[in-house]
Length: 232
Image 1 (tube, rainbow, N blue to C red):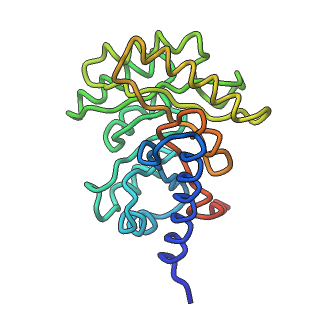
Image 2: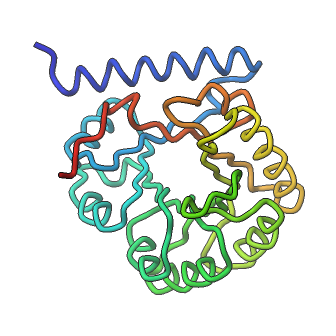
């Protein structure tokens, strides 16, 4: 009988195979693509298994869930925690205390609040500016024309390090075209901030398109952990 570890190992291997094939098709090295396993709604015990299987980056969307879960990770020092959900002002202080990377910064108010919170807890945080590729309300992100100003503000912050950009593919349209637009935005940011080399794009269903358009970080959950358990 297969164990949860066996299941995760098989799924992880399959995703790495997909990344390798996508990178080869794009003329890239798979070593240039970092896998962030999205562990939202799954327990810390799964994270512990993933760490044992070599995973070094996890992503969480929900602050309240993530706060408690991160404290339970057996080898916390071995994993980089990415906060990838929409970030509200009243959650910033919490997120700054446990996240190593915040991928969803999208406005000046959040930049300033996160910088102050990082100072209070004595930490430096890696930050990505989230780009809205569809203008759909409720999904977060700065419109492309506003991204440079947000990036500049992160770059000027005393306790934040600008690493690049992040986006979620629109629900409508072709992901490849959306990620090509993100690539253009990323290139513009990198011109002003040479160290901002990260492009976080692509999930379980569209990671190949993201790799083809230069993604350096993929946020994959379902393809590794399975269908998320019901909260009801």
